[in-house]
Length: 356
Image (cartoon, rainbow, N blue to C red; front, top):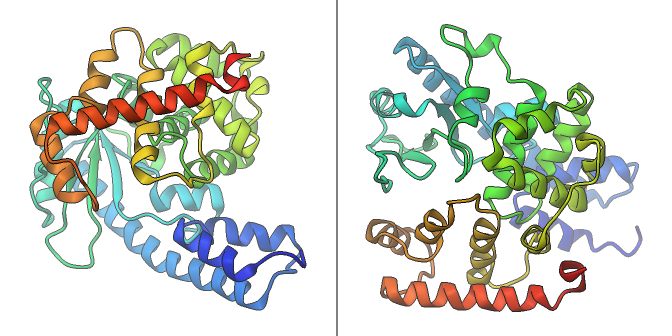
């Protein structure tokens, strides 16, 4: 403990939005033997998180109430409600927006409802199916309010899971209903996988959820769920293995047996990056490569459109909103993406952990 640079740790955790999440745990594990400045910074971060989290909670509940009035079933995703459930404190998990799940067939009606609360129309790219890739993002009309994201799924490969397992039954109040524990666990693993196993925020969610509710997961429940949704099976198992490596999730205990991992699975796990220190461009490439490595049968074309050959609307949106965007053309972007994938693949194939 005498060797810890508390000032550097404070700065690092704050930059990674982990100070209120991991700070109290560090203080607890050390018996309070931390620097006074670190303890004060953690307390201040949690207090600020509580104020902002309370605002997000109120907006989320207002959105869900308005959706219920329009007979649209909804459920909260991630955010302050999750923080309160798994950390016991709304200030422990920082969020920038409100995430709400609705059924895909009610997505456009939900957009109308949220726009009626003073939010702008979404500008997300819409695929040939008529749906956005994952969600519609609505910007607030008033300063100080958070954006609202209306999701119809949790992951690129999720076609039915979210609608069938995470939404309350018709005419059931969301306040009186909660998904089965195994469904909650799978949703957190899918969020972790979609974000490319990067950093510790989503991994910490998985670990904290397991500490709080893991005993409620029935033996064999996950195996049965993955048989029902085979397109998600590899992604969930790989996410579990990455979470085991990062936060100690007991994968074998949950599955009843050690998972069978092929070369692509091992490569995806090897790309897990709990302490990202690579260039942002290569980090995003690694995240995109995980998408391709775990794509279900028939999913390669969709992966290529998401990560390599971007539709013009998506390319323009990223060029407008991502700081430091250097691509001048879609061709240039595709060439650089493929080059970064090749670099990552070469690095992975030299790793004994991948080839074993």
